[in-house]
Structure formats: C-alpha cells, structure tokens
Length: 154
View 1 (cartoon, rainbow, N blue to C red):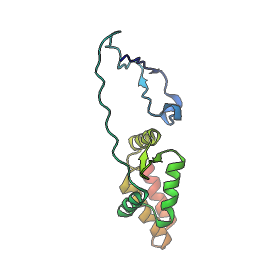
View 2: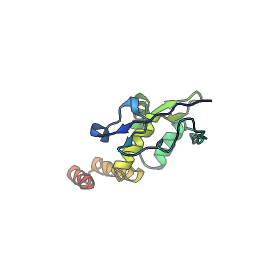
View 3: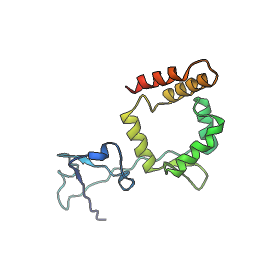
View 4: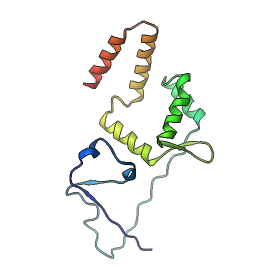
C-alpha cells in the first residue's frame, strides 16, 4: 500500500488562537519551524501507529445520571444540554443510542480545557450551580456571586 503524506506550516495563527474552523477540526497545524516529516525520505518504509480506540459513549440516561452525581445541571436543563451538544455537533448519536464525542467536540473540549482549566472543570461548574441556588434561595446576593466569578476570570 502506498500512502501520500503532507503537512502544512502555520506561519501566523491569527484568529486560530481562539477559533478552529469546522473544516480544520482534527487537523493538526504545526508552528513555524516544526515538522514531523522532515526526517522521512521519499520511498522510505514506515509503520503507522495504531490509533487509540474511542471509548464507548454513554446513553443520555447515563449522561444525566453522571451530571446528577456531580451536581451539574438541573432536571429542567438536562434535555436542553443534550440537545445543544447534538445541534452543535459536539456529540453524535450512535446506532445503539449512545452519545459519542465528535472530532469537533473533542477539539472544542481540548481548546477550552487547555486555555481555561479553572473555568472548565466539573468542580467549578458544580460550585457555580451551588452559587446560583444560593441566589435563588436569597442566601447570597447576585452581586456577590458575580463578584466572585469576575475574580476567578481576572
């Protein structure tokens, strides 16, 4: 079997620092001067690495159970969360009904977690849910919660 390989060099990341176009999701762009192919010669035999197996997705019920266990979301928002994940093509429904993360979903997840680890953690989300409950029950003011959130951002 013959394979053709190529790579592209990203000279100026520009808007790609914050946004990856859907056509480029899953495509790795190297920084200037980086190369994975520079040591290869034309006609050289290579042995491709095996791709990591995707772990089996979970059902909607399993996802909701996990969210409940971690104190994320509310019964009124579970369906909306799942619908949003599907509409934005972050997950797709498999033939057996399970939800599997897409390349786009994985790229968005990796971008957000790498850039904003403290904001995109289960602990932070659960803490925000508790704070919002505090506002609803008038144990804490909206200003206090927003002030704490603003501090976390800065």
